[in-house]
Amino acid sequence: MSLPSSDMMAAIAATRFGLGARPGEIDAAKSDPRGFLTAQIRPGGADQPQGGEGSAQRLAQVGDYQMQKRDAKMTGDPKTPAVKDLDKALRDKAGDDFLARARLGTNTDDGFRERWALFWANHFTVSSTSLGVASVAGPFEQEAIRPHVFGRFEDLLVASSTHPAMLMYLDQAQSVGPDSKTAQYQRKAAKKIGGLNENLAREIMELHTVGVDAGYSQADVTEFARAMTGFSVGRAQDPSPYQFLFRDNAHEPGARTVMGKHYPQAGQAQALAVMRDLAASPHTARHVSTKLAVHFVSDTPPPALVARLEKTYLDTGGRLDEVARALVTAPEAWDPAPAKFKTPYEFAISTWRAIDAEPSGIGKLAPVLTGMGQKPFSPPSPKGWDDAAQTWCAPDALIKRLRFSEGFAAVVADRLDPNLLAQTTLGARLTPPVAKAVARAETRREAMALLLMSPEFQRR
Image 1 (spheres, rainbow, N blue to C red):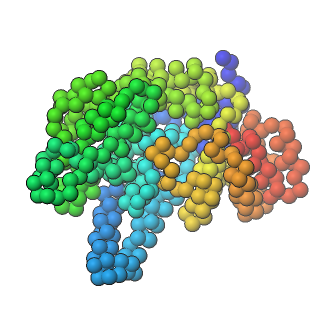
Image 2: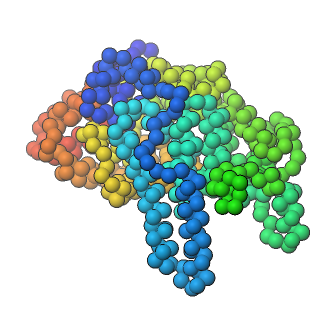
Image 3: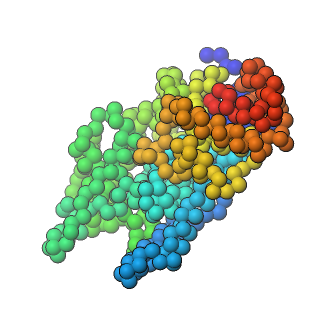
């Protein structure tokens, strides 16, 4: 398969593999487009957004809020000013986390590295379904995802599966083995018995690792859930307050069998052994490789590309840096036809990148993304945000993008040269019809709105 010109490859490097071209970015990639991308792969992982507190600190604040709320409820007023202020402070901090991540996306010179991190954050989704999870959605990315995105998949799997955000989001923290010491004590004391929760075990198998086509059964999910009992979050009085804590008394005793493999290990080691085998499975290699090809290249990716990524995954023991290199060097990934449609987040970030600017505040960014269907830190299910064009290009959604484009242009276009902007933003991907439409527009604002709404800008 022949490669396109270096000019076209430079444009693809910035707009398909990256988050949209900043001024000068396409020119910087021209001499070696593949090298421009591979230089962004590094053992230390992805960049970190500025500022922000760790998950333990945030959860301590959530604990304080819940305690004050309980105390206020006992006095008959559950919505005192102090409780309201704490609630607002926690939500504001979650907004600050998202704004910091968006600003990193608009300002980074390493758009491929950031897109790679965002892919894995979406693969191991947590969603702000409660104030607790919302408070640590940002720290979850920073602590469990970003440090591991160019390491071993197994490490990324374990880090995400043992992080408080995931344990709370999928209700794992309260899961108790039916024959565990905790359950026996609860029965003797005539207390309400905490049950086995299968949510995290199911999503790890279905979404994070082997996928629905791997041939596992409901019994496999249940056995894995039993192996994971004890995975919890420390309370204020525990040895690891507000961090991952294995509660041995809540763990279901005995050996387990998952997907035909026997696990005699005791305690925490049992679930980690299951995760190790899931990470090494050819089914996981296929599932992950397909998702990567879909995200970066096409909703219907070339089978040769999937096979190339899958082989690399298996040959390297799930080394994600090597998988990233295989993606960047695969000729199938450089097809000039832009087959991917930007999500609202990608569209907004690429718009700010085009003019070398950043969102001014979460109060402006959040309503824009929510209006276009992608509320910050709030994917609709553990599947994460959909990657398919049909989800994002409905007529109503396009009208909302048009309104955003017109409003954005009204603020910034008068100080820009729209013809130069079209060149620096799209490079060789700029087609004569779009260049002509921009050049013939009656005003700069109209020209910029036309550029932002063009198929070349909306697709990557």
